[in-house]
Length: 343
Image 1 (spheres, rainbow, N blue to C red):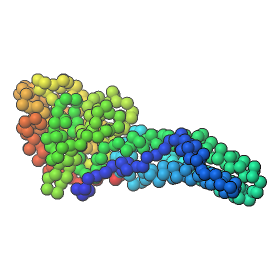
Image 2: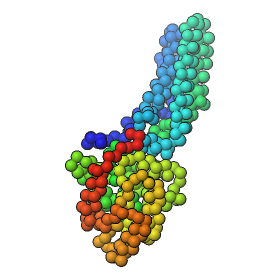
Image 3: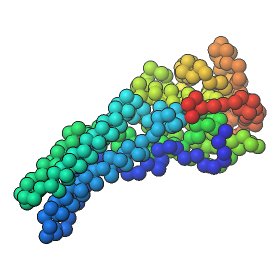
Image 4: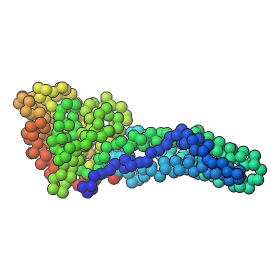
């Protein structure tokens, strides 16, 4: 398990990356500002070097800050690949590395030719020719830079969820009390952060019990509606959760305040059970303080038909049943050794 130091997601400190258009614009801004000197050859070499150094710096920054696919936790790789296809990502990086070498060779070859040339008009012509070829590569061959930069821009906003820390994923349809429960269980005020392809923000709380530190997360917009309503990218974002070690706690609301019927909520529960077959599932019937015994019994009957064994009756608002449920969840997490699948 990781220590108590606050976890930082792997893309958080990525430097600002320029798109292919921005790289060219940076060159065109700096290029005319180079101070002219009497020695024409020196002046033209300085102009060529400036162009090369700007492009080399920006391309090397992109390559250098890319995540190591062998070291990045699988959870965060899956999130990244919701934005850019994995094959497209690796292909783009290979292309940037390839053309970075091509540009370096062009610069080196033309520089030698300029150094050996004594005719002023030829020195200037060689510089123009080289700069034109280099910029053409950036504009035409390296358009994939834009896809990488866009993906990394989104990746910087991912929530900080420790892929090694035991996690309680709180699921359930809208307005069943998930956010209230996360706040109730968390020992500190939960943090709110973006999560890919949801209309709302993820909520991340933490709970410490002795040496055990547990993450509690709610992912609104993902685990709250039937599978057939989700697009392939959303489904991949959901699949990323499989790589977090821990359990799923599904909330059901059958109170007089409920928005969705019991059958609608059971339908979503079935989807989650099918999507997360490797995760232990716990179910809590929430809002017991405003729910009739008859409705609770109907919910229990439906859950037993699904062979759900771990069922709790709680009120996240009043705290009823929370202690018993939490003790069981923590006991389960303590007794099971969780390891992220590729952390």
